Length: 212
Image (cartoon, rainbow, N blue to C red; front, side, top):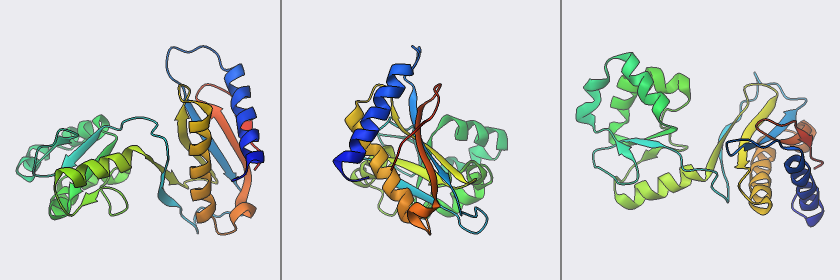
């Protein structure tokens, strides 16, 4: 996947899916699909964040922190009681792509918001979302990291993640595919032997197999 030969195969695949894409009124996402084999979802769980070289979009982030910040919306600890109503928490969860929190606020976050954030997969975690030093640089760095990351999970024997947008150039998409592919490969117990097929597609298009 790291040589020019594979890049050319990806380039040809991108040319093909762009050629067959119908005109849409929105910027279609590009999906990377990795179908697995010899992989037991119940026995082996993958739940990681992969860093992408090229940002797909700015995620809407909310912080359970004490200081106001220009980069994100914030909810300080004193306002936690305002969210005792589960419906209000659900609206909050639907509004944001990602939640972060300061370390000292995490117990309160778990108590007040955990029952909704947890099942939604948006609970701040040490993997991505908890800051120990609540300052402007730490928050900016974390938000930048979030915007360049994609979550990879195995809930079934197939991994599907958004890897780019139609408006991105082919080189950016290829770089993102390579990074996500490498991250998935690293986590698989049998490496390539766990991969049945690798495909890319537009949101509204048909998947096209990419030889790896």
